[in-house]
Each structure stands twice: as structure tokens, then as C-alpha cells.
Image (cartoon, rainbow, N blue to C red; front, side, top):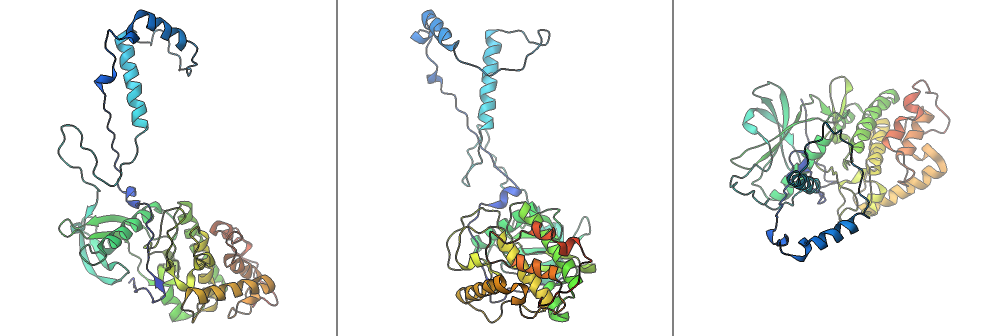
Length: 410
């Protein structure tokens, strides 16, 4: 059974006002084309005189027109002033349609003669699912186990109530989470979204995802402690593949930690809880409270940078890798951003001078290749930090027989 936990006190719950991801489910486009009869000159206007027409034709001859595809004489339709006028009108309509832009969040202008409103989003109904039990509680709602009445599939349902305090923040976060999950459909080691449903009577929103029957990676670490290096490598390979796929969609997770990794049958890992994810591009809004969980925040986030990118997820994965190998978090007994930044900068200087020996608590027989990956993921300089895709190309993953320990690795 999937066990869900509330966020620890170190979790920072703040969402940037990113572009609304609800367009992953519906988009609205509006175009209004008005033809002003007053713009057409009268028949006795000077512009319609024979002399003006000859001058206009003479001046237009010098203009270079784009070459159009040739049409054989047999396939060419009869030409007349009326058909040429219709062709020009059709071209104008095509240009107008090509320049359509997404409508703002306000109401869309109604089409002439149409008073019926279209539905804003095409959501499913929560009454298509039968509730089976409560799995846990998250930041903005309850997670329940349910069964689809038609297919019989058992799923997890994140229930976001629209009647509680902070309704706009909760719904905005749910829309953004749904959009990010939809963008990551098919990505390896990422929780898959099935549907988005609503209750028309209450306005509550429901995110329907696959159900992973297992514990979180945090539960696994608390029960069994550190992973042997081969198992840690297998886990990191899955997590890095998932992160690389997420980043390829232009999405940042921003809260990767053992609590947000589900462990399924056979040790299959799934990155979950995209509640802090964003498809937006920097700069992000200034705020004294960083997005994410304190112990896993990257140095650039701790400095208050508004221009961070996917490297923040890679740093968090480095913290997870250390925890897999050592059995405990990399940074403990730290409660403020300022204290953690001092610890991070000190660790960076130690890595530069001592390499992997800067880390305390690692197994003494850790391979040199594993130490190289760990130092690459936890590079304080984000420009030199490995990407998820680059880390997967390292010999620790490509050459699994290179396991000989080196002196001074721990």
C-alpha cells in the first residue's frame, strides 16, 4: 500500500506565479475579424479613376512579388475579376487565422448569433470513481485510493478542496501540477497521470494518477538503512533517467527528496509529488521563502537567485545519492537558509581540495567512480555541475565492473 506523509517542518510551501499550465488540457483561441465598409472608397473617388488606376499599375510593376507554385493550364480554373477577388479574400482570411493568439484569462468575445457558453475545461467526473480508502494527506489535499467504475483500474486520487482557505493557491497549484505531470507522460521513473476530474457541485478538483503499491524511499531508508553500492547505483540510474526526461520537457521538479520517491515492486522507483514543479522560465519572483525542502536546496536557491534552472534538481539528486550510500541526510541540524549556505560553501571548498574524502559517513570501500559522480552532482558552481543526462554517461553507470576501491575515497 502506498503511504503518504505530510511535509516535514523543513518543507517550504510557496509556489511561484508561473504561466498557467491548464493549457495542457484545454486552450481557447478567439479571433474577431471586422470588415469596415467605410474603408472602401466610393466609385467616384479619385483612386478609382482610369488615370489613377494606370499610375497604380505602373508603380506596382516595380514591386517584387513572391513566386507562387505554377499550375498547369488544364488545372487552372477560369479567371475572372470575381474569382480573383474571392481568392484575395481567402488569402486575407488565411493570414488573419495564422496570427491568432491565445485569449487572455478574461471572457472570450461571443460569436455572432451564439449565446451558448462552451465549457472552459474538459474534465472528467469524480463520480466515475469509487472511493476505497484514504492513503494520506498532502500539502493541499487528501490522497485516497479509488477504482474506476468502468475499467476497474485502481488509482490514487489527490483531492483538492475548493471550499477551504487558500482556495486560489490550492487550485492554481493543482492545475500547475496536472500540467507538469501531463507534460511528463511516458517518462521513465515518473508517476503517471491518468485523468483530471472535478465535482460540479462543490468545485473540488481531483488529480488521478497511477497507484504505486509500496513505500516511499524515505520509509525504505528508515527501515533498512544505507544501500550497498550496486543497489545505490541502480536506484540513482532510475532517478537520473526520470529527472533527465522531466527536464527534457522544460519542467523543473524543485522538490526531489526521498519522501517524494515511491518504491514499487522489484525496486522500481517513481518520482512523485509535482506540487512544487513549474514549467516556467526564470526569472522567478523574489521571495524570502525558497521553494522546496531546506536540506535539499541548491546553493543558488539559498543565495536567493531568481535565475536557477534544472541544476537545482541535480543538486537534490546528489543529496539523495549521499543519503543512499551513507544512510542519513547530508545536512542535519540545520534550520535556516543562512546556516545551510555556510555548510554548503564549506563543503564546496573541501571537495575542491580533498575530493570525495570531504564527505563523512560514506562506506570505506566506495568506488572511485561513485565518488566522481557524487562530487559532480554536488558541485557548488551550477555551471560546472553535471546534468542528469551527463551523469548517466559516467563510467559508474556504463562500466558496472569498475568497482575497485581507491585509498582515500572515504
